[in-house]
Structures are given as C-alpha cells and as structure tokens.
Image 1: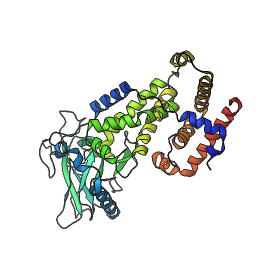
Image 2: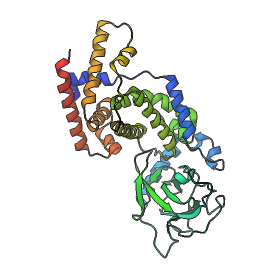
Image 3: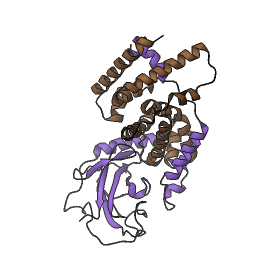
Image 4: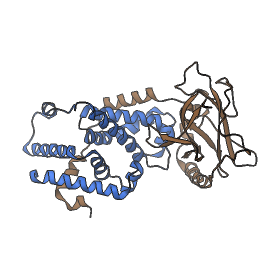
Length: 209
Length: 179
C-alpha cells in the first residue's frame, strides 16, 4: 500500500490535484497553429516529404526494425582509425556550392545560416557492422532522418557521408535503422544539451582550423 | 497515444499532431498550473512545450514512452519559466481574479470542495520546486520512479526522498484545516 493510500489527507490532496482542466478548443487551435508555423519542415527535395506517412508507421516491420536497431546499437564500436579511413572532419576551407551533391542526398544549408555564408564540406563517419541504414541527423538538415543517408564502404562496416554545412556550431546525432537515435561514439566529440529535448547531442564546430 | 499517430506526426502530419495536442493538452496544463502558479504563464509554457515537441518530433525514438518524453520537455519549460520568474516580480493571480473566475453560485459542498482545492494549491506552492515537480510526476501524473529517473536524470533514491519530503510538507500544511 502506498503512502497516498494510507494517508487520508494526502489522498484527498492528490484527488484534488488530479482534476483535469477543461480542454479549450481555441487554446488547442492556437497551440497547433503556432507549432506548425515554427517547425522546420522537410525540404521539397526530401524523398520522405512525398512518401505516404503511413508507409513508415507501426506494424510488424517497425517492431522488427526496432529490434534490429538494438542489435545494431550493441554492435557499434569506436570508429575512426586515423590513417586507415578518411579523416572524421574535413579541415579544408575549400568552398562548395550548397546544392552540390557530396556523396549523399542533396543538402540544404542549416536553416539559420546566413545567405552569404559559404558552406564547408564536413565528413561524418560511423562504424556499425549490423546496421542496415545509417543517417546523420542534425540542425543542419532540419533533424530529418531521411535527408542525409550515409553510405557503407564496400565489404566494410564504416558508414560515411560528406555534406556542405554552414560554418559554426551544429548539433547532431546518428539515426540507425530509422529507430535508434545515438550520440557520436567518438569520445573526442564534444556534447551539449539539446534545448528542445533536454538530452545530450553531439556537437561539431564547422570551419574551425 | 498510438504509435501510428505519433509516426504520422513525426512526418509532419498536422492532423496527427492535432490529435496529440487534444489528447495531452489538459494533462499538460494541469501539471504546468501546479508548477507555475500563474495560469497565464502555465498556458504559455504548455504552448511552448508543444512547439518544441513538434519541432523535435523527428528526433523522437519509438522505444521511449511518448508521455515521458512529453513531460520531460514540459518539465524543462516549467523549470526555465520558474527561473525567469524568480528574476522578476511575481505576477501571481490575485484573489479578485480567482473570484472572478469562480461560478456565480455554488452549493455549500461545492464551496467546501473549492476551498479545499485552493488550500491544496496554496500548500503546493509552499513546496520547493524540485520536490513539487517529482511529487506531481509520481502521484498526479502516474509516472514510475524508473521513468522519472530517465526523464530527470535524478537517481531513484533521491526521487523517493523528494516525494517523501513533499508528502510530509503537504500533510503538515493541510491536516489542520482538513474538514
């Protein structure tokens, strides 16, 4: 028996606190409109934007994907072996056009980027032998798991993608098999708090020499 | 909330998101009012929570319980609002405002109930924020200590201590006036 069940005063207090306020339809409408106006929507060139929403929802396929993702997560080990794989982060300052394809899906520069800012190629790598799909998800691509898929090296377990990103500080994570949202396992990568979720995200500073 | 609706909302389906707001708005407002005292600010924070939620939905992991995730965001919003309000003059609802919101005529028993509700609200305001939040999450919103640990990052033994302190304080504040 819990403390609440034993204690008459607390039980009454909790009953009082559990009373739900009436749902105000106008307030709900305002909330929905405000949220919809502020969300960063998928780009028009995002394949997921045109896909029927139901295609990725629920069902056995989704549960199996979740299980596979857990297996994948368990198999993830440290990556980036200097000298044997391309450097994790490009330090080059050679500018590229924001629309130029760079080994993955077309990218848009981060939404908060200045129009005059020249994007810099940034490579992301992730090691997993069992993953079926890996993508990098960050503020630079609207946190879309569909927009920046990573490519697996032939016969290996290294996934990578190089994309143009506006110089500055960016938050990201990796999405494995559409269901596991994981931090960059590289211990040298800085981490920060995501202001929306209050959880940790990995941080990359683009353009720092 | 069913996973199909959440998956649709993740992909930007505004109708699915509307169903989520309709389902959780009253609970979120209940929690925010208890955390913030100020009715208007509570409504603002609930709106801010759903704005953040919608923006962050693509990052939602299906294996995490949706309600826990929602209340994690709401808790962050309320704590931030409380920090901000501590820096400015309290803008609490006056007695006159509260009276104006009351129905014009009430039965004697309804009046007693309302007095009790007000007593509970005032007692709750006396609690330190960190104890109040955990008490509400556990006893009012029904989250387990394990879930709250995941949401707040605070260990379960510390959570139980906070709930006990909140319970002791509420009992002490409410018992003398209970009818």
